[in-house]
Length: 79
Image (cartoon, rainbow, N blue to C red; front, side):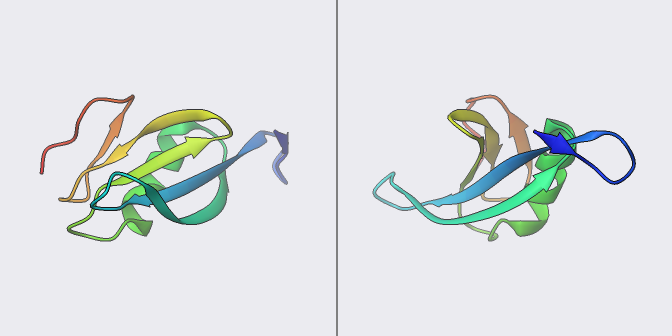
């Protein structure tokens, strides 16, 4: 976590596409102040029709469903 310009802190996140074989592919890094904001950014970055996972370091924050909806935690998103 590092200081943000406005005095808050930002965390480093990475979004991965989940391949048909279940493996993570195509990681894209970005920063956000919290999980909720990171989830909203993940929805924008995710590819429609593919599941994506959002990670902060070694912690999976959640998944973006094939419909582009972010779900916190490791619940299976709706297809």
